[in-house]
Image (cartoon, rainbow, N blue to C red; front, side):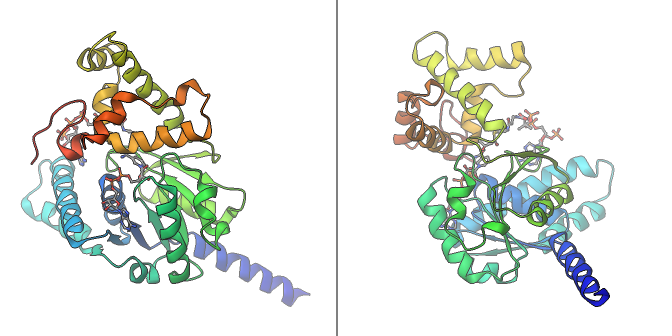
Length: 312
Ligand SMILES: C[C@H](O)CC(=O)SCCNC(=O)CCNC(=O)[C@H](O)C(C)(C)COP(=O)(O)OP(=O)(O)OC[C@H]1O[C@@H](n2cnc3c(N)ncnc32)[C@H](O)[C@@H]1OP(=O)(O)O
Ligand SMILES: NC(=O)c1ccc[n+]([C@@H]2O[C@H](COP(=O)([O-])OP(=O)(O)OC[C@H]3O[C@@H](n4cnc5c(N)ncnc54)[C@H](O)[C@@H]3O)[C@@H](O)[C@H]2O)c1
């Protein structure tokens, strides 16, 4: 009897210790979000592999991570000599490696975070392959903005080790992380994902697997309503932005934010929701948004959206 309970206690504490010790992370997708997530995970001492489809894309991600780190060291070491800054940069970059081979990258990972295109079929195809390649212990998380986590998790045999980690753009600066659980997510998995978020320096909030979680459920209809206001000819994007910044104290106006988030990502979100709830007035597709995306005007990342940007 005593022997059995000792075994149980040992098993429980081993699993708790395991679930609280994420040290190696694979981030799949190295765009706006993936590169930011990889950066903050590496900066907080995790060994990170960031994966994308081609070497070219990965190289661009590396250079955007370096640029972001340069901005951070300026603030972190305002009076420091070059030595302190250099050490910080070297330490973070030593924790980061780049790959185009997702299946190899997940082999030694405690946690896989997916940050690829906002498309259910593409995400499921990826997770199905990763599920076969990753060790049993590996936790999976999606950074999806709008797709139900439970639908993505059906591609795997590890729903108990699956959750949502929804970061915000720009990841190095935004302090929030939404941690999402599905009914199958175990407490140990949830706690581990939450502990990982805190280790990254984020404030975590918990939300059920509902459309848009907390922030996007409020933010996306607000941005869509701003587009409708301009579509009706009631005001220009510039004036709406000025109004919301100076009249409501938002750091960016809705059109600046749309361009910052990416118009393709916003369109994927609205389309997905309007397909599920076609009668919901908050989720109506927008002609203006669809036209811009069709013209490949995706916002800051493509050089033009509602506004034009210098391509550096
Ligand atoms: C849709 C998705 O699912 C969910 C989402 O992500 S929704 C989007 C959520 N994000 C937002 O709402 C962002 C709203 N905007 C903001 O909070 C602010 O405009 C901002 C933090 C992005 C930028 O701040 P702002 O003061 O406007 O501009 P800026 O002067 O360029 O930057 C402030 C500082 O941050 C630094 N910074 C900006 N972006 C950075 C980055 N990516 N990496 C590192 N540092 C950065 C700048 O260097 C600057 O540093 P300094 O104070 O030493 O000069
Ligand atoms: N943009 C935002 O503000 C924001 C905020 C929070 C969450 N998200 C979510 O994060 C995810 C990524 O968004 P993003 O803005 O970083 O998009 P992005 O277009 O900037 O980057 C996506 C990256 O994924 C890569 N990719 C696509 N399919 C892949 C695959 N099968 N394997 C490996 N790489 C692949 C692409 O090459 C691209 O580099 C989406 O689910 C989005 O909804 C976006």
